[in-house]
Length: 170
Image (tube, rainbow, N blue to C red; front, side):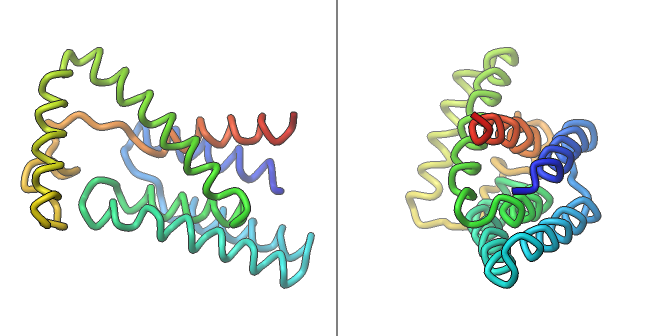
């Protein structure tokens, strides 16, 4: 597994997402390219297939959230790139850790903003919206609403990548 590319790419993505709220395409392309080369060098075509499958799964899992405007395109593309690095064998584990980290970060964000009741009300509105079969972005509860609280998912991915690698090295 390309430990270095995972840590460097994920950390860079986390920093850029925190500072600028975007993850650039150049980082995604470099991460995918180095991951493919690494896995081909280690396991040939089987390694490439494993890496491509990880990329496809990583992208496909988060793509619906992008369509609903609940996540940015950079997050989706970068998680696909990270899937290429960790391969299909570990993409679900890294996703699980990322979601848990994002949830913890979101709870801290809600607490320090004093927005617990508003968040609960908005969650109810969003569930009702989706419960009525409206599988499209909510008019107010989406990424385009600059006043809404949000957590940069790239930061959660970065922290999750470090946790994942520490787990793998033990």
